[in-house]
Length: 174
Image 1 (cartoon, rainbow, N blue to C red):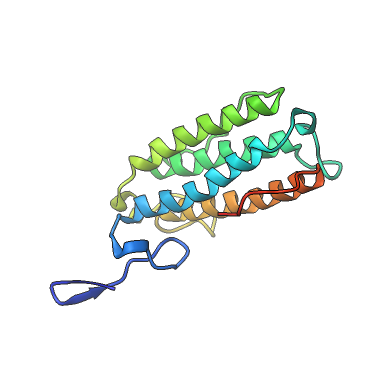
Image 2: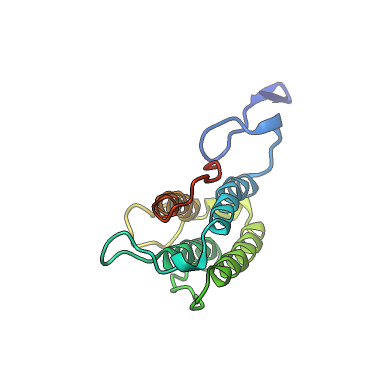
């Protein structure tokens, strides 16, 4: 616990755990760092998947492995951009023929999303949003919480896909 002007201050990450070192990074920066930990693991996981599995899907009607990875990256960029613009527009996702293509598009989206995230201020996060979705109404940081949940949910699915196509050793989830 840090102390400033005789006031005890605790710094917590987005998941409620104490922030390492008690350094106040700012809410936007902390949230970005928490997200990046998950995104980096997603990128590591995708490195383990061969081209022959790009079209794997565990059931009829499911997204393919490649589509699911692109879905996570593209839509999460939309959530972060909404903090700045309030515009809910489908992401422009390139069609991929190989896992190498998928990995490149995911990395490109990671850099784009990170750059947008870095432009956010704590004031941006506390500004009321214009969402019509009841679970997203409130401060704009709810868009980021939804994005974070979306990343984790689909990353979990991708871990299952990877295991189902024979990946033996997967990275630690975070």
